Length: 450
Image (cartoon, rainbow, N blue to C red):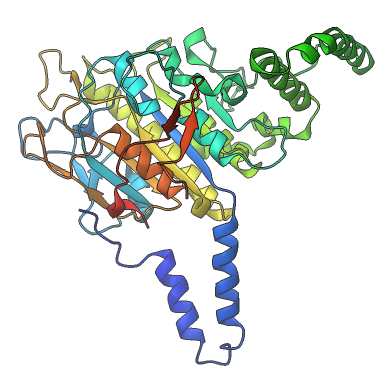
């Protein structure tokens, strides 16, 4: 069950309103409170997915088993929320626990990386002829914010080798596909050079967003005009389908190249102290970029942490504890800084953050001091806008092998995310054959919703 925090920021606001009503402010304070509530309700909503590629060990992060032989090396710590205890390697997240709800009863039955990735990212089992869109494409489409040059869906540091289809826009078409930044499945070089004594940060950039140095603005315009002339007649005869989608994507890319919004991807504009707070790795800098993109109105941003071209990541069949310790500290630093800065900017209440991977890992430790694939009983966490934080929903057995209370599936998590964002998960999208398909057929977990 979810345990309500003893004293939240929402409680503080309520107390201020009530407390001030008797000291001469009753004529304007209620109006101010109503205006604040209305403003928050009308804010554009955003979603950030922290994708833990490879499958994190729930037993070493969100659902520790102290005193049991399956518990392993790590200790749990008390968070700022009474009754909620998490890994010792999440010290900063523990301080912000009133914003986080842990879901400990996931049972998904897909223990293969590719199939599990597809299930958790689309809400559907990978079978049949339908190419389902990823959650980023779906929610980016639903949450899109007016006329802007930035895309609705940006994916930072994805590792798509496990299942490339799980990261795409499926039957929604390329218009709703992600803008990829720093993909780790193409041997992306994450570290840039830096002067002696300073931190080397990942050089996160969007490929081909800059005009080639040997092409002037005038020359570029002539090229674009020539292309437009060549395409005009063809598009007149083929106004729908793939040609139209291609043209839409192309025009969006051209608009972004010449827009000030492209500066959202330039992390050099942030002070080094801020960049260091997030962490110098690709994930930490990706979280900083996510904050900058949300500030600019991007509806859905995902930041990946885990399996990459150069390491084992969360797929810890061996040396589990060293790998999980390192990754947990990286997650703790980036995620906690992201929430803190979103809150400082008044954006956390309108931004929902989901942290999950494709499955969990076996509570039983194997002969290589690792944990293997385990979809039967595992955890994820959700935070920010629309979420009632400060506790955990669901429970697993003392050995961590089965869910004993509050079992949920991938579709339930997706439905809960929709509700937190103010969306109806039952709303339909049309596949290419004109068949309506609900965003999610799951049951929202009302206990974690505010």
